[in-house]
Image (tube, rainbow, N blue to C red; front, top):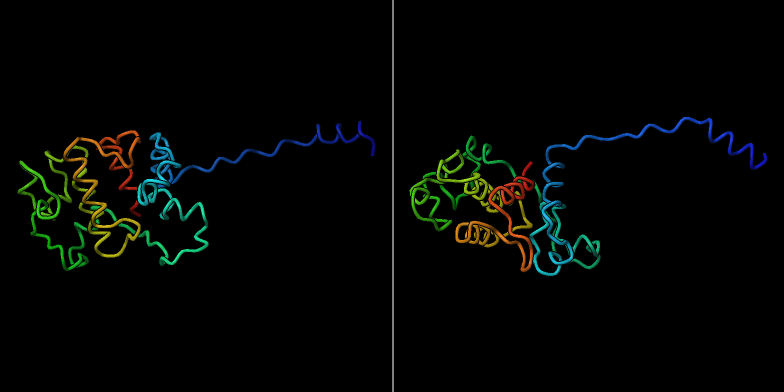
Length: 190
């Protein structure tokens, strides 16, 4: 077959239709996180948990392929605030539904008197529902549903957000608003 015949044949073939797969809600949340402008390289060096919601694996582990990891597999089965609100029997023993939110997450004002159960429902004083999602994430960590975050990491997120009105995952990163923080926390949940 000559060169001219090959060109004619390829010109007559219809182009393959481009398949665009719609994003799942979790995929859309991850895309929003990726669009926050946080550098993956900086996060790899400075933070073990900042990108875990994207891949449920530490960034350095993702880059190395966990070739020499002594750590057990990461668990990424977080559930929503609604799950915890509707299933108090699933709560870890160290957190009781009538405990004050402020017992675990220092705060002042109205939220200091709200119970752990009540924070899982919308509170007017909880702008962007950050407290709601922090509590659910804390329950996920304490119950072993999420292992790439620690209790201290969740407390640090709350403390920075509650103190400054933003959360900065790593030094030099763009600060996350309450809405951005909720997007990240939601991405750790099924």
